[in-house]
Length: 97
Image (cartoon, rainbow, N blue to C red; front, side):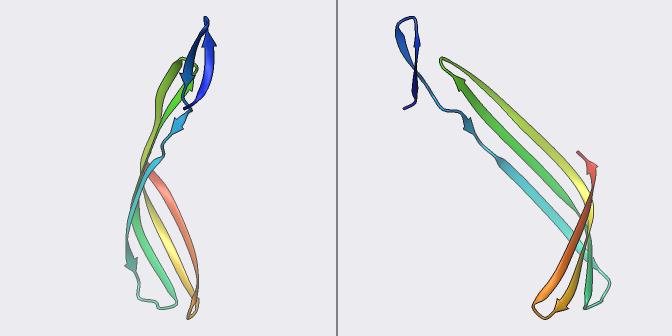
């Protein structure tokens, strides 16, 4: 089940550390212009990350978490090189973090 630790002639089980990563990223955009070779998209995004962690040391354990949330606006450019090939570039500026 885990590693064993000795404390005052008794044996206790130490469980392994546990980490969970949960992320939610959502973006939306609108095309501007009507060029077939170069497409321009402006929009925004929302990002959320939560990372709970369980640290266990022998008989003792600790729970903590790290969370970040943010929103931003951005621009995405798509250049159509050939029928099946394109070059894409994107920039995003954080509004809230």
